[in-house]
Length: 403
Ligand code: FES
Ligand code: FES
Image 1: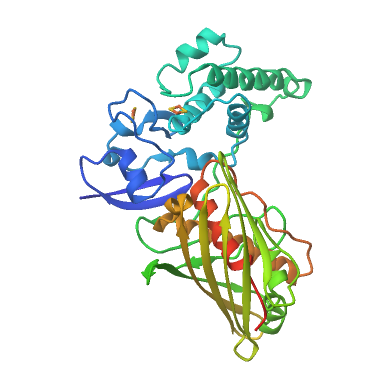
Image 2: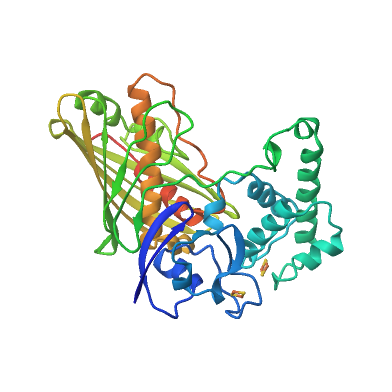
């Protein structure tokens, strides 16, 4: 095995790889970035296309060891990229995907093309994209989508504001968002990462630590901890209210408590082509003397036929007079088609992201700021990861009844 250090989607990663392991396997199997697909493993189909140091490459014919020191960007790293957002929208509008297997590689290649070239004919677009094969949709929608985005970006470049740009190329209208640097992660190990920057509050980021995942009696369990810069009483006043808790979780909505003590709830999930709406009921068991609350619930998504049940058991520990450490024990069971997203690294990342959104929102509200959790983490990338997040939140939130 050989040690490598790479930056993947803005995060430093240290890992051990075997000499003949290709990059696609490394990304998928060690980092669980399964948006990079593998089709031919011969460098022909383009399904495995990623960016390496800013240039697109076939990850199936690139050894991971040769990437030591490189910066790699997979489809998951383009979530907040404006140009990729336009391409995703255009692909959707033009029905440019069917099974979606070729789509991650197709999008990465298309973005590279639109970024480099403008005003290509349809024939030229076909030629430029000939290294990416689609086996089921056909290419008309794909070419239409790329052509539209190319025209759109060309018009923006010709706009007066763009022509007036006197700074360095490519100028503001062609700039694309880069992935923000994040704290190091270790492949296959529990992570403690810096939270994503929130756009909705001026508060400092809150670090959320997510522990290792365990499987116990068929349920997936993990711990999440973070510290809020507020006294325990103030935190408890908010976190003992299940409806208030729900409003701090992205995608979750709770209805008022029923006479029987249950809370009907709904969790909306939207990741690119994957959409789900989990409806369910939950209960809440409060232990005020221990500053502890247990929220349990279960629900289902009619469209996919998936079922979910889960529990969030959280307690607040005073960390001095002005801070509170929040410990959350999460457990859940997923069944049905969406159960495939329950892989360890995906779940951890999801839980971390939801935890960050939740902690930031709670912090802002306790500081007297107006804050609402983001309703979208981005579409295509952390797709699965995000999905799970929301699902987990669903379980937790879509339920609650005071005991
Ligand atoms: Fe890499 Fe086909 S899987 S090009
Ligand atoms: Fe199925 Fe392209 S959409 S392979």
